[in-house]
Structures are given as C-alpha cells and as structure tokens.
Amino acid sequence: MTSYFADVDLSESLIDEPRMHAYRLSRIQDELKRRDLGALITYDPVNTRYATGIRNMQVWAFHSVIRMGFIPAEGKAVVLEYGGSEHLADGLETIAEVRPSIPLHFGPGLTPRQAVEKLKRWVAQIESLTLTYCGDNKRVALDNQVPYVAGAALAEYGYEVNPGYDILALAQSVKNEDELRAMRRSLSVAETGITRLQAAIQPGVTENALWAVLNHANVELGGEYMDTRLLSSGQRTNPWYQECGQRVIEAGDMIALDTDMIGPYGYDADVSRSFVCDVDRATARQKQIYQLAYEHIHHNMQLLKPGMSFRELSEQAFDVPEVYRAQTISMNWHGVSLYGGWPTILGRGFFDENSEDGEVTPGMTLCVESYIGEVGGPDGVKLEEQVLVTESGYRLLSDYPFETTLLG
Image (cartoon, rainbow, N blue to C red; front, side, top):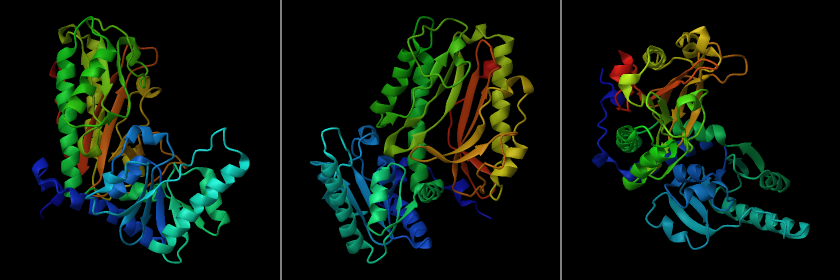
C-alpha cells in the first residue's frame, strides 16, 4: 500500500498557494457545517490568516483588536481591515470583500455611552454580514481574541455564541501537501539559521548575539518573526524556559535553543538543539544528559502511529530517570502549524482525568521534545524534532544533525 504522506514530494517549487488557501478555508467550513454554525469570527491574526491567506502586521495585530475575519460556513470570507490596508486582499481568492473595521478598543477617553454606541455599531456590522452570508443562522463561533464584551453584546441581540478554538485546532491539525512543503521550507530556513548560529559559538559571544544570528537568517531568507527568544547558556539552561540575555558564553558552556521561528509562508519551524562551546571540553555529565534527551525524543517518535490515543502515547512515553523528572517537560508532543498548538500530548506520569485525549491521525504535524536537567544542576539539554504522521508511522521534517561528540 502506498503511503501518501510518507511519499509526498516536499519541494517548495510545487507549492500551490491558492490550493493551500482553499484547503485551509474548507477545513474550517467543513467543521462549521458539521456543527450547524453560521460563521466563525476571528481576531487572532494567525487564525484570520489561516482562513484567508491575508497577512498584515502580524505581531502588532496580536495586541490590537482591530482586524477581524468573518468566515461563513459557505462561500468566501470577509475581512474587516485596518484602514489603508484593504489592498492586501487583492488577488486572494478566499476573500469575498473587505470592509472597514470597527476597533474594539475602549480607551479611557470614551464615555460609557460612547462605548455602548461603539458596540452597537459593531453588532450591526455583524448582523449585516450574517444576513448577507449566513441567512437566518445566528449561531456563531468566536476565537479566543474576541473580547468578552463583544460576545456578550452578540448574545444580547439574539446570537448563540460558541467557542471557536476547537474548530480552529481541528482544522489546522491535518495538513495538505502544500502546507507540508511550506512547512519544510520554513524548516530549511531554521536549519540555515542554526548552522550559522552554531558557527558563531565561541567564548566571549553573548546569548543575544547568537539569537540575532538566527533571527537575521529568518528575515533574510523570507521568514517573518520569532515566537520566543528561547536561547540560554551555562547555568541559565537549568531550569528551561529562560530567554536570551546579555550573558557572555564561556568555553565548556552548554548552549540550548528552541527556534520557535515563524518562517516563510507563516509556518512554524520549531526545532531544539543543544551545543557545548568548544565541544572537546564537554564533560561526561553533559554527554550523559545529552544522550538521555536524544533517547527521549527518539523513543517517543517511534511510538507515533495512526490510531494511537493521546493516553496510550503518554502511558508508553519514555521513562525519564527519577533524578530529572522534577524539571522534565510535561508536554512530550505538540501540534505545529502557523504556530505551535493543538494537540498537547503529555509524557509518562502526567496524564490524568483533566488531560485532553484524542487520536493520532495521518497528516498531523507534531513536535517531539525533551528537556533533561536535574534540579540545581549546572546546566540542561533541550532537544526537539518536527515530524509528519504518515499512514504507517512518522516522517522526519526537521533535518539538523545532532552532536556526534556528545552522543559518544
């Protein structure tokens, strides 16, 4: 039996962006129709981009409640855009029209009456869109960045308001061939950046200077922005989740990084590697924790098969030695699309009655990660790979080599 996902050609030259945009819109609309919802309203710029392909000042839009997507269950989407940006929708076959947005900011200069009037105008805009694109279906879903007051106002005017996160999570979890090619392009940029970063490691360089090498490569090669600044060195690698700063790297230091890079086409390249400055000075302990992290992710990758439940993966996950458990990462697998997202699949010992279960499906793209470092230890190791679930197992999407010296 031919495995489609294992065999798909990942060449960037084969990316059909209109087909990719149409596929992504259809993924959302299929779920809206299944739930008998009239539309999805998005304010998260990543969600609007996933649904329509439009890109406009992404990072700024995360904290500015101005740009809105209205995605009906049938037909094309509507974008409510920041003034002067309407032309960005030109040529996007997923968008029926662009309308001026009503910002949902309620600053201290607004009187209570003005705030109420603004909300009324916004609801009237939604009612106009609903009548045009959804008929009498006033059942709508909202993404997580729609302000509470907006959802409450819709409910007052007879709308049935539903959460939209799970719709978007399900839609983004399974990729088509164009998305996979776009993701692989983003990963290739990340790998170029890591190569340059590794070459720049030497005593006297700062963490920030190393991170700048990675960031520069992303922008130079067509990428967009960095979701985090997770690079640390020496003692700052323990515990994990410390962003880069002005610490000066010394010979023998561990350097750990997680790219969290939003590269070309807006796809996330989420790869982690750890290095030792002047690797010939690596200690036996550094090699031991590196090898454990390597075993951790490779054991967990081998478990990936369609039909496996998240609970089953958790129960069979790598058994992290007791001395490292207090600081290990509970999230051993996570989804990756235009950002790192659903699903979150927990490692051994973390799954409980509050954990979300589900099933591994062909076409899912997942990151498999590990952190190994004991409490109070001098450093730690972070490793992570990005993979595609195929009909029979998994396929590596990331392609950056591991440190053979540290693996022995």
